[in-house]
Image (cartoon, rainbow, N blue to C red; front, top):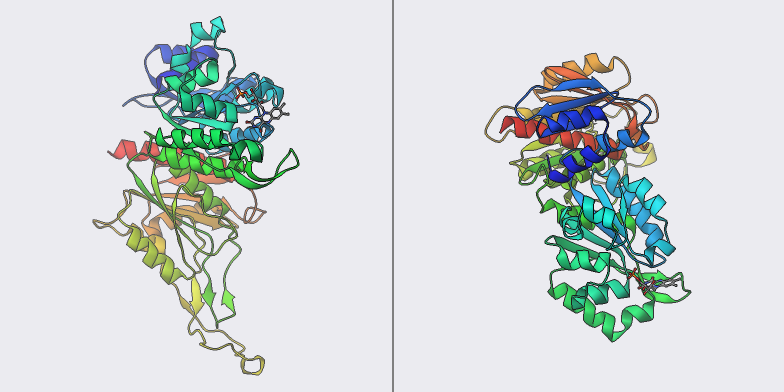
Length: 461
Ligand SMILES: Cc1cc2nc3c(=O)[nH]c(=O)nc-3n(C[C@H](O)[C@H](O)[C@H](O)COP(=O)(O)O)c2cc1C
């Protein structure tokens, strides 16, 4: 467990958790209505979660080993987008601690930033309470990555020239971590030779820049200077964090997502309603936890996260070939809704109305999950299948573990609006037990599954 997590826990968690932590470094997580405390190499101890403390749930739900971003919010109109960025990062399982510059506080309030980050918001270099709790040097190093969004012309100028005359610029000079900046400013400020000179200097110093985009600006002008969209910044953060020491650093994860499409002729096909949202969320969460991720995806309407290596396929045969080509992998998560059958023949030319056969003969597709789960030197250490069921969820999922030879099944009831929806309610079934997870966003399912995978791989090492 990281020091900051222990420090946070001591400051904020209930007596129960403080006591647990005083007894030595322990991992504290929340599972539904229970709190699970586990010291390294020891059995889990489960307590009922205390009720009535809103902050408690948020803090405890954060994985103890989560990656952490120090987000510096500068004084620009785009500061409102940083609130969305915090939300997206938290959904990906990344913890956020924020510095809000005095100018930034004119655009967004410390209250909003603190409520979304579920942490104290820092603003003043000479705030003695902060220095007692956490000095500015420690603050700048308590994260795995420092992100400046919006990066004002002023913050860029200070960082490029080593000026440290407030908390944000001092933290930028004192940090030993990588820095990502998302510039946002008026088009003329951006084009000014001074800003361009600062930009080149920052890049030469190893700072990663995301954006700015071109478009209509709040000031009424048009051109480059608009801050990159929060999702784009989130993906850039995940890409950089993948190189940091996340709980899955060094691991290769293979994930399939979306439907497969089985052609009848050049214009017609058999497919299913899978949107790919859950698979994409899992791939993103595994990347956020530090894994190198290969995402093999059927056709979906989603953009592949830039933090993963995406391979786009159409048929089950192509998906199997792409998965086999991606091996070896430490973990395989089979989320794709692979068509069980395909038309026996696929016509080379479009079938004319009059020629259409009334019956399409089908033949079975390869079973990708069972194929990759077969014992052998190339079998991933952990093989996880998804079971989309409309009845007898647990029974069918248990049978699937035996049939396919996989280690876990994530079972979900797709009789409601799960396919294509934003939320999922799943049961994680392992060979030796099962956990029913409450209904939550697909990103949250991804983050929680990534934590479970990291724990399992660590236990198998
Ligand atoms: C309404 C308004 C909008 C501003 N927007 C920006 C902006 O988008 N980018 C920028 O670099 N500066 C902008 N500024 C100027 C900065 O707020 C100013 O340079 C400030 O000193 C930056 O402080 P900081 O870098 O510590 O956050 C804006 C100022 C005002 C009053």
